[in-house]
Length: 186
Image (cartoon, rainbow, N blue to C red; front, side):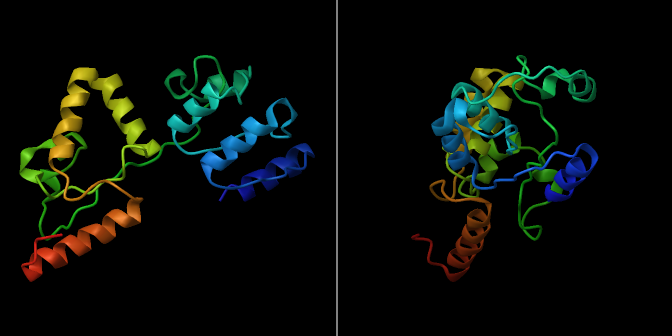
């Protein structure tokens, strides 16, 4: 999806772009190994948590750009200008509309409500997306309230957290099948 933008950049600026793609964590490891010898000029990744990891690993350096500062609000960039948020990522809740009304479940905070006990499927806590979600709750609500939410979420889990988004959808279908068959042992 980014290739057309890079092609336009090359056309406008005469700079050939060598795009290297891959999973985020291996790319970060590559940058760490290459260190100062890395040919990389730009790292594009999803989720601010990954940028935090890149900053902690010492793989980024600050950039001073009036254009970026003007175009990107301060809350969407690193205070030291080591990264800039270019897009938002939707964090969506999936549910069976035959069993859940939209007004019952519209926020992540709702997932901690005891009425969802045994009905929530999520990725593991090692997922950068879940870590960023919890960090955003800590920033918005404070550590105590975020911890209370996390405990409520854990109390409502239908299964141990694992896998990615597609795995959660599959788990929901499997749990529906098990419950419909009357075999609620797994």
